[in-house]
Image 1: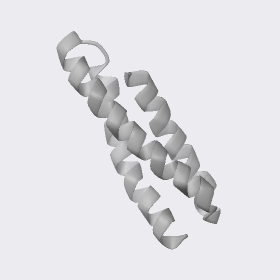
Image 2 (image 1 turned 90 degrees about the vertical axis):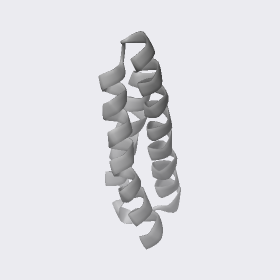
Image 3 (image 1 turned 120 degrees about the vertical axis):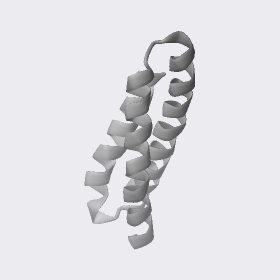
Length: 79
């Protein structure tokens, strides 16, 4: 779960650069990716605390997703 969350956050980060031209479909994917990264990161944090595996990676994904929400919102508002 932690790796998937990091992949979602990384994908959102990439879409942030691509959506500089304010393409609506890319901005929508950016918003979905950031939400997915935050949700999967939160799930990974809860599971990581129980199983002692993937906790740090999940925290990184959740933080990346949270930071990218600001980027996604700015792109959607400008677009």
